Image 1 (cartoon, rainbow, N blue to C red):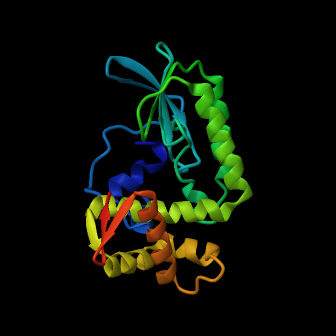
Image 2: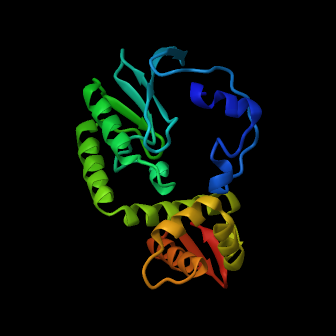
Length: 221
């Protein structure tokens, strides 16, 4: 575990670990080792460097195998973007951290990236260019990022549940603390209730193929 979260894991503080705010369920686990940025980690016959990667989460980390040029980037860099910047949804700065981590990756002799989502890729320069373009767009329009973050919360909950009645899903979203924070700060003009916004977000996810809606029930797709 990152050193900054090891105590929260030991005490199983779901608020500090963000599970309560995001409405996620996770089985309790124990940390075997506490690591700080810069410390080495030997795993899989390789020596990895433990690198801080704040942005998606203040405690997020990456692993870099300098001998082979392999970067386990978590949600700091995907082939086409990066993870939701949760501090920004909570009213805290995070976009500058994303930019700084992208600069850190650019300085490393990376040959292959294993991202937190998607297949491994070798076009690191292309991925960095796409990530920086996406970051610039989100910085210029924080409401767009907030809308994306709200949809991610809904999608991931459906990945856990597989299927829910729409009314049940709407009630879950409205009761989820982070969704409520995003609604308070970024409620779209003309959308007068959180329930109406959930309906709009689910429609977007259905139209994109991320979810399916049949007979009043929402399915993960």
